Image (cartoon, rainbow, N blue to C red; front, side, top):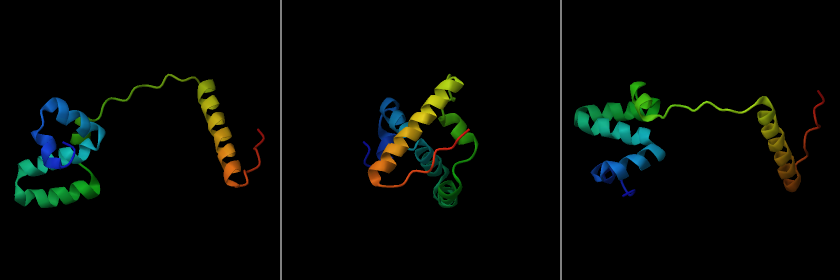
Length: 104
């Protein structure tokens, strides 16, 4: 179930792990370590986890390795110009004056 944090740990790993990684796995990982550490250590560590994030070792285990992008410079510029055109259309629709086009 997605209703509470405790029920995610009761589910089988196949169901419990996939949503945890997609929907804030860092929080559920910090909660798991706090619940295993005992009540005395759960308070301060939970506060630190919420303000500063989990220790550096925890994200390395939960994050997937980044895939290298295989875009050429022309493709990147094409995406950039397309985004600029869409922004101009949106500004037009909202009645926002667009900035003057920059000359190279």
